[in-house]
Image (cartoon, rainbow, N blue to C red; front, top):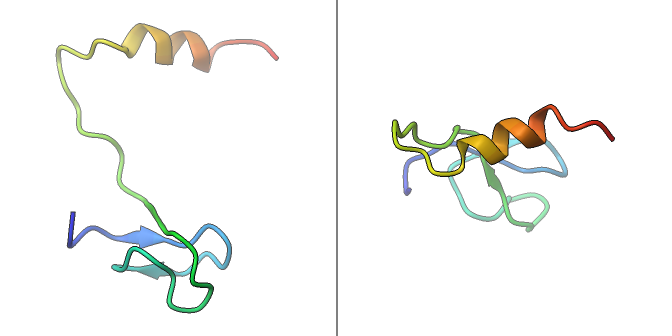
Length: 53
């Protein structure tokens, strides 16, 4: 997405660009994944969430 907010994992600055202007590393999106009622992987995500280390 072109207009989604992104965050640099190293310096923690927010930007709209794919690369951080200060660190020059890839930024990550801060938005959650889209909800789908027919989520095929929900059972795996829930199972992983409660997995003991």
